[in-house]
Amino acid sequence: MKPIEIDRRKKPIVKINKSLDFFNDKPLFPEKLEKANNMLRRIGLPKSKATNKQ
Amino acid sequence: MNLDRYELQSGVELEVFEFVSEGPKGRIPKIVQYFPTNYKNLYHLGFGDKNQVTGEVDDTIVSNNNNSEKVLATVIATLYAFMDKHRHAEVYAAGSTDSRTRLYRIGISKYLDEALEDFEIFGELDDGWEPFRSDGEYKGFLVSRSEL
Image (cartoon, rainbow over all chains, first blue to last red; front, side, top):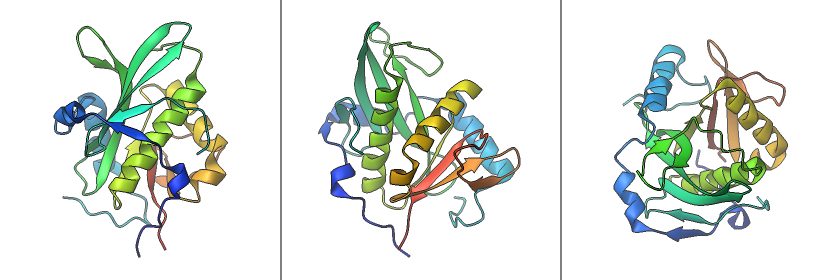
């Protein structure tokens, strides 16, 4: 199984601003991230999904 | 998605996006971040206002800038850009409040037919998931690319 290609017309034009990569490893929404991780630990993923826990 | 939306900026990795909401309350910088969860390839979508003075981000502010549809369309556009670069990623999103999560659900419902051409969408229940329904009451959403 491989992901379908996204229609090129649906992809937005994005102007690259390299300064934003500074935030890539810094969670800007830590409380919500923690809440999401807790939820995932509690109920897991949809049954049809095969994502594995790290 | 052929919807009116704001111009986007992003880092090279397409994990952090910025745009400026414009409306009666002025120009409000917004930031969208896709950050890895504890699950491989599963990212959390965070979205909020960026304080222009302090640089701090707040996802609880209600801007009331009379442009929620355009803002939502712009956030959905970031999802297309992110998922196109991160081909095997899945994304979890929930509003900062129940009413905001409901707003997301209404927004997804509005564009559901088009979204389902590209994505699988699940709604989060108290104790599990179900395929997204427009009339479902959800606590959050999980989105992944449809597969061949």
